[in-house]
Length: 94
Image (cartoon, rainbow, N blue to C red; front, side, top):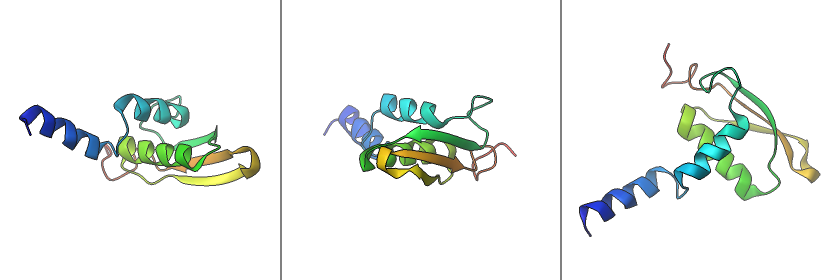
């Protein structure tokens, strides 16, 4: 395996098998409008378990905090997502 292939494999592992674009788009769905570092409190449609897993990983990746998904209308896949956010988390600028 070349150095480039090793670097790509490591990046895929660190990104949970997702692409950077997938993570960025998922995080944008829940990121606070004020600043991506602020507390997360968003309502999203996450109809599938795979979608919720992607959102979960994206929040953890960008903020180093653990999101909570509270169903508002589980049948339609509507959830309230909350998390401490980057600033209040262990990696924060506090």
